[in-house]
Length: 98
Image 1: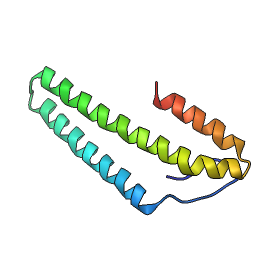
Image 2: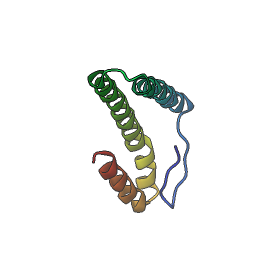
Image 3: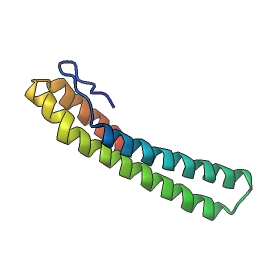
């Protein structure tokens, strides 16, 4: 995860990056299982329930990313005077919550 602002650079805590990557891997595995359910003509209600679970997992991951970004990236951006990064984050949150 790299900052998108123009005036500052930083890196993320490798442990946090690993946690998010692991959660994404689990969600990908879960989504692949849902795909198999569809291919096997499993009950549509069961497929929808599993899709809802994947959607919930992805929302939690998104919240984790937002939290990390606000606690680290945005603080550094503001300290560096990078107000474009604030606008960029606002745009990203707006797209995420749609």
